[in-house]
Length: 111
Ligand SMILES: [Zn+2]
Image (cartoon, rainbow, N blue to C red):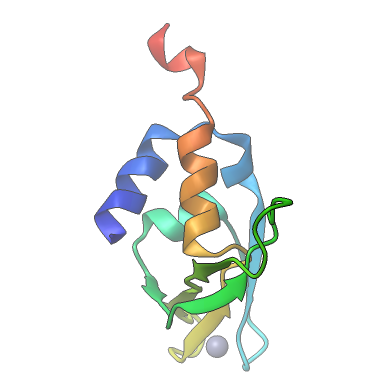
């Protein structure tokens, strides 16, 4: 699954969404800002326990439809103190894959 994400990331290298930043904050006071791309492409993330939640896209005929949501946990070694910095990625695995699959690659790639 990690390979799938990384290959999708590489196809979406110029996707504006991946330029969003996530802030990592260590207990020692060290702060690092990484783009989504930088963080995920390093493969330093893990999958959390999938949760069942009520779908936010309930149609008129379907009630209580549940979907699986898998959280992504990011962890990285702090360059200042060597402790592990952990953060939860703002989107679930499913949301991330949907976004990466929907957005077409930047046309500049073919120039
Ligand atoms: Zn630290």
